[in-house]
Amino acid sequence: MECELPRVNSNQEEMKKYFEEAKTIAVLGASPDDTKASNHVAHYLRDAGYTMIPVYPKHDEILGQKVYRSLAEIPVPVDMVVIFRKPAALDAIADAVIARGDVKTYWTQLELINNNAAQRIKDAGINVVQNHCAMVEHKAIFNQA
Image 1 (cartoon, rainbow, N blue to C red):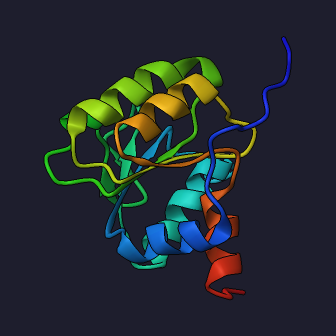
Image 2 (cartoon, one colour):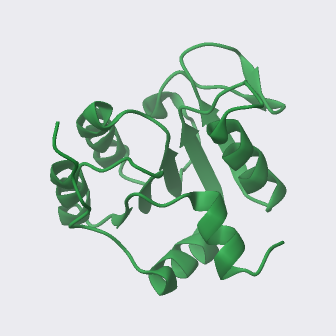
């Protein structure tokens, strides 16, 4: 498989704006395992003051928050979706993000790139960040230790 480089992406100034405008962040692929990156990022985002909503096919609770099985099941508006899923899943996730109609930012974590999905998201008027860790970027932007 050939490595894909992001052709559709945002810069740090745009990322800052996305974080400032977000209140609710859904973490797709949030893990209950505290050794996993998705757990660390979800924990960080919750502690940074966001309403963090875990989306995971198993478990009822992660980090003290109710878990939803899919993005479509979340009953409140979602400002940002942070994704910890394989690149092959990103096309279906893009469809789900677009179908919700309320997501402002679609964010894929490190090494998660799907330019076709990202372009469809962008064409729908949604902000796109690919191949960046939400926790690392938030810390850098807001000078968090």
